[in-house]
Length: 168
Image 1: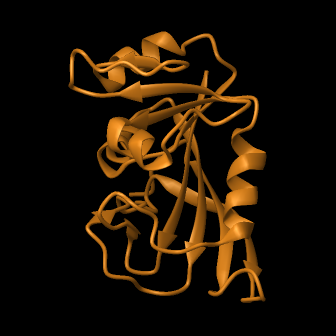
Image 2: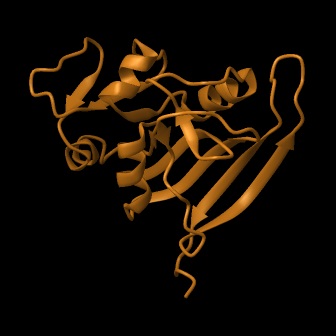
């Protein structure tokens, strides 16, 4: 199984505020859809509730500490470790948030790729993406985009791969 992270992150590390995305970037939504379609997504309960429903064409695994939490059409587990056991036979699994789940995933050796949409603006927020330690991660691709009529802010799609050996 290949574990990948996908996130949209502002310049100041913000990924959300009050359990909501702060910006509306159709290009990022299309990127997210294209990457995750046909795959399994792991997410925390709050992230799922911010989305509001299972996304079509994807299997959803929700991680929560609430023992009685149930959602029709989704698998519910109670730890990141349990989620990994559940999806161990999948080809590629995407971690889609929130901050606590990202932190667990970025440190896990199964995680090989990070897809970041970097929004080149700073926002007030209460949820942050963990730092990408360049000793362990190498940016292998970057595609820059200027704002346009649909996307208010400049942004880049960035792909990071885990280094085989960390830089000292």
